[in-house]
Amino acid sequence: MGEDTRLAAVVALAQGMAAARCSREAWWAAANGACRALGGSFAALSVWERELGRLKVLVNVGERAEGEEEFPDDEAYPVHQFAEITEFLHERWAGGGEPNAWVETAQGPAAGRRPGYVHQRVAALRRRGRGSCVVAPIVLHGRAWGELYVARPVGAPVFDRADADFATVLAAVVAAGIAQTERLEEVRRLAFTDALTGLANRRAVDARLDRAVERHRKEGVVVSLVVCDLNGLKRVNDTHGHAVGDRLLERFGSVLSLCGAMLPGALAARLGGDEFCLLAVGPPADEVVKAADELCRRAAELELGEGVACGIASTADPIGPVHSARRLFRLADAAQYRAKAEGSTRPVVAGREGPDDPVVRMADEPSAEPTAERRRFRGRH
Image (cartoon, rainbow, N blue to C red; front, side, top):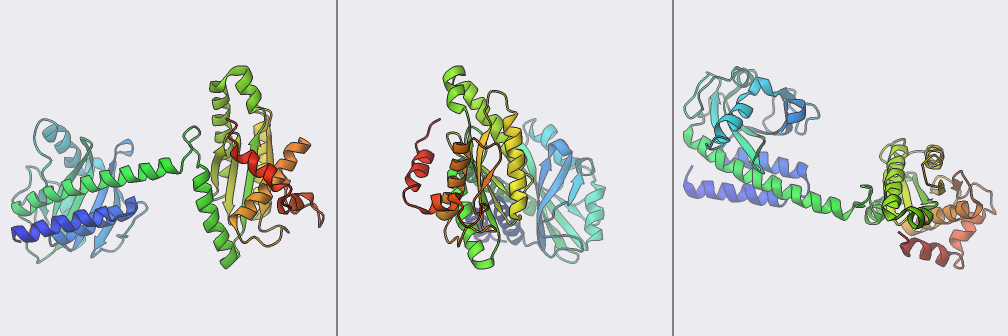
C-alpha cells in the first residue's frame, strides 16, 4: 500500500469518527476504518475494563465468525488470557517505550511481533478461520484504554512489520476520535443534566416528552407525567441555610430516581427550584400511580422536609385528547397544584374525579394557567 493510499485511509478513518454522533457510531467507524485501511476482513474494538479484569468487545465488523455479533452484549475475555495488553503497556510503554502494534499468525510467532507467544490469540485465529491479525494498543489520556484488532483470512497475505507500524498510527487516530466523542458526549450530558442532583433537567424532559407525545399520537403508546413540588424547601433554606436545602434536594432526587426505577425507562428530572418530575412512556397509568404513591411515602420520611405535592396526568386516563407536550404538562401541573392546595399526602391524578374533575378544568381554563406557569418559572431555589 503506497504512502498516498495510507494517508487517504488515515483521513477517511478520522473523518468517519468525527461524523459519529455517539460512542457506538464512533466505535463502528474506528473498527471499520481500520479494517479498510489495513486490508483486513474483520476488525474489533475492545475496551479494558480494569475493575472487572477483562477486555470487553465493543464492536465487531467485517466477516464475522459464528457467535460474533456486531455490537455484542457480553463478549469479553479475561485479561490474564491476553496479558500482553497490560504487561506491554505498563512495563514497556510506561518505561519509556512506544505502544507499538504487533502481529500474530495462526502458525505462531510472526515477523514484527513482540517477543512472547500468546496461545489464546493463535487458537482464536485458527478457530475462526483467520490466518493472521495485528493488535494495536489504544492509549487514551496517558493510560491503556483498550485495543484495536484487525484480522485477515487464511490464504491472505500475512501482516508484516509495516502493517504493524501503520496499525500503531491508526490506533492513535482512533484514540483521538474516542477522546473527541467522549468530550462531545460530556457536553451533551451536561446540557441535559441538573448539576445539583445529577437528574435530567427541563431541557431533557421537553425533548423526551415531545417525542413521547408524537409516539402517542401515531402509535397510541401510553405517556404519563408525574410533577412534584418538594414541600418546605424555603423554610429549610431560611432556617438552616442553602447548603442544607441543597442536601434535601439531592436526597429527594435520589428518592425520585429510586421510585422511577419501578417504571422501565422512566426519566427522573429536576425542573428547577423545588420542582421535579417523572416521565414514563409505556407503563400502564396504574403502575405510574403506584410509583408516585411510593414516592410520596418516602418523601414524607425525609428529615427536614415536609413531604411532596404530587400530580399525575396520563394519556390512559379520561383527560381528553393530548396532541401536545404542553397540554400534558399543564394537566399534571394543575393536578400537583391541587395536591399542594389540599395538603394531600397522596398523588392527585387528572381525570380520575369524574366528568366534573376540577383538575381538568383548571388545566384547560385560561384563568388558571398563569398561576401554574408563573409558579414553575419563577425559580425559588
